[in-house]
Length: 264
Image (cartoon, rainbow, N blue to C red; front, top):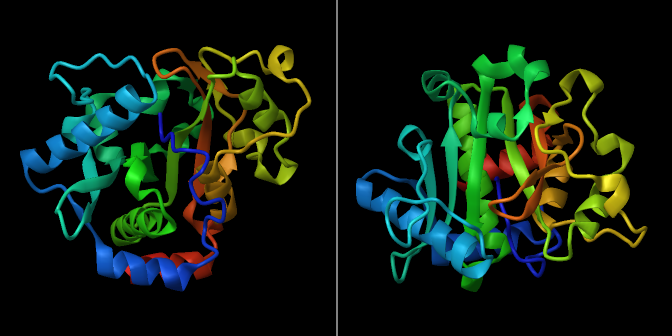
């Protein structure tokens, strides 16, 4: 699962108020990587608070009130802290291709058959477990997180970013089905980049024709140049429909890229 954030999160990503967001971020927040075990635990605690306590996900964790799985030890953890309190209020985890090879797979391999992306793996980074504390869901925080991701990709010369973007299914999955069925054709990856869900969401049966409420971060990824790589998978633990997102860095809007890299 890549992210679940409140539908009230700014709908203008990225970014209607870039200069304002950058100013707020610089005065109130800072972005960094986790450098110590306690940094990682802070990110895992935030993830638990958002995914389990707020959104009701069923997490299999060995440490109470922390979202921990076996991928965490192999990932970089990107953190946004509130400067005044030094609390971690936003996070992404980043799994580089060398670590994915060492583990044997990406997290996305648990939800999708990625055969058609096999040739991209040596240059493909996976992001996941993205979340922001409910009191800090603003363009400023996501700007810093995306700036950190862009800087990481550029610094390490990686070409592709993937992850599972989540749509909540509290309504039984109707909106998730509508989101997929109402995607513009330009949002879909070319067929040679399609992935196939292991537990397919029966979107034909669930779609009801109502206007889709697209999660703001999915809108943001698409505006950056990302593709959706086919039909959604159902994740029973998080009760979400997940779309596999692929962002070739060559497709990323250069204006956004310059802004993000300059922001870190």
